Amino acid sequence: MFPYPLLVPSYLEAFILKDLDIDLNIIGIGPIESALSAYEILLRKKSKIAFLTGWAGAYPETGLDVGDITIATYEVLADFGRKYNTHYSNFPQNLEVSNILELNNPFMEKTIHLLENCGFYVNAGPLATVCSATYDIKKAYFIKTKYNVLAENMEGFGVAKACEKLGIFLVEIRIISNLLVTPEKQWNKDKANKILREVWDCLIKNWK
Image 1: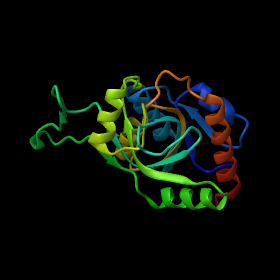
Image 2: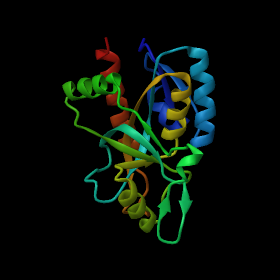
Image 3: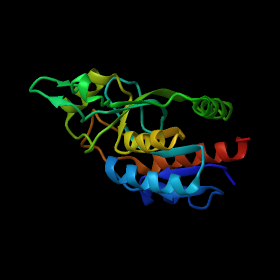
């Protein structure tokens, strides 16, 4: 059995992985539910490493396409701060809050190495957590430009915050299911799930 808990936002993503020899946990969609669920699950599991996996939407001008693999080097909570007509700004430093969580760790590097050995190309870089999926091209360009992120999801920052509080390393693997430059197109869940399954077949077989 894969030795670490795997967190998945929804049953639609979990369905393709349910027969694998893995500790699969559905945590819910969105930053609040996923953070609370992840904290409760990981507190009980007492593991020092956790994995988060699922779909993501690729931002414009990243070169990403449906089915591409992304691994988060850090998570940005894109909707957090002070919103003006033209820009976001962070809260004052004296509040001692941050909208960025670092995810670089040896297990992330090991994951990339194993996937590359299986013939996958991995796009490692910053991801954005949003409270609502972006269907506004202007907002997509805004977030991409502001934070220089590859793709967006709705759980990464919340789960990363739960892991931070518990002292757990997090590896976040996302498969691109949709392109934010064409929000009117249906998400290609079938292709994303096909790659998701192949990714986890590789990791389960090769993790030592």
